[in-house]
Image (cartoon, helix red, strand yellow):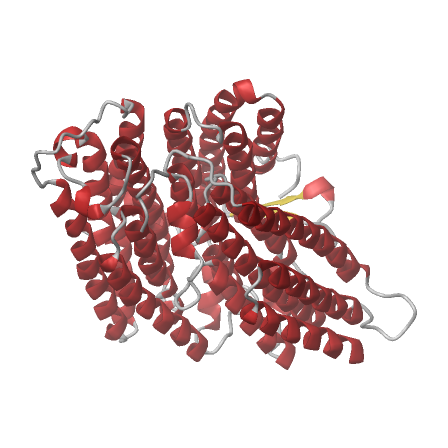
Length: 488
Length: 100
């Protein structure tokens, strides 16, 4: 628990390294890509080392500058943040590898590398924060870099989508900040663990619960406040879409999850049920919208709206341990699969010059690896075994039955069927034979293989899931211990 | 207490303005009023204990919040300008006729 413990500096490196790399990449554009890739590799190593550390020794707390909470700011790592850090590093590594060829001969390269590094730094800092206000700052850093990345696609509708994203995100974080102010007023601390001990249910806590949940729901694009997501995620350059859909949109959910175990642990069931109902509506609405889209990237973006719904099914089931395990595996599976799908879509877009689903003829023949990446990613999104999403859904269903609320299980299964419908709609067109020649010469193999590698990881995640599941919510997990002590 | 209520009122008025705003500039201004409301609440709540010394932590939060608000406002203004400039440089993913 002390600052000088061997190995404990991984926590700091995970934040400092991408920040430093971003500055260097900004100053030296010539080596920016190399630096970004090297940093992504290092992040993978650091995240794995940290995960190993917290697995061996339990949750890990690091006091920045030696000032402990409540006065100082603590960084906190447990198995949950550890696995998310690892998957973030994997997705970023594959996406940046893909971007090297994707961005060749375009003007947006020099800015893409530093901003994506800032994004990674913000994401890592968010996953390691243990302080309600620090979470606000990192959420803002994350949103600002995400908006900047969307605006890199220098076309009108992308800029308009970026502006809408930015405004929605500012309003949401102000609501969150007001909630933090009220929480601080009642408890006098900001550290999540201390908040959990001191939180009492005064009217101010109720208001904080409402404001913070609403703000995070907007940022996390929960139905019906997902309005900014389809534009921002689909008009952005494809590597950016992959980062946003796979990682950024999960961050607000992660914050809400942390809050749910700390200051809001005693929140009444009705709030959880409401969030779960909105999640269920998101699954249905997002999938139906995905079915209606004419453009591939919009379809994938609406699929993200639907998949976010699954995450929020956690809240009505929060009492059972398998809900947390399920939702964690689901986040990992969705991050890998969705990144693979967006990267594959970007590859098709780059080669065909469009992403109209109707005109995706002969993609199967001309871009086999790309289509395989999309199809495997799609299979994971449907939740077929052995994908991580299958395990995640399975655990959610288990949690639903354990609590006798089988309605949520029906939603999980129905959402899988709907997602199968929109994935097969794309695949159907891709396998169509058409006489029109398709020129696939512009597709570097690295792009297709980067997408395929991610898809393969998502598919095989289920095989490796067992040790992961034991990690999350295991005996070392204070969050769950805390929760179970509150069980009536 | 009066000041925190005023801050919450500002927050609500500005929230309504953001939702109803059609012009980006109006929305940006409204968002800034909203943040002022939040900062007012923070500063007002800093005076929790009767006495002369106010709690410094909310003050630190306000300063951080102002930095964030200024950067976000700058970014929103840049995006608005780009929207108005109507420059549509060709990008990797934009080809004529590839509309939705």
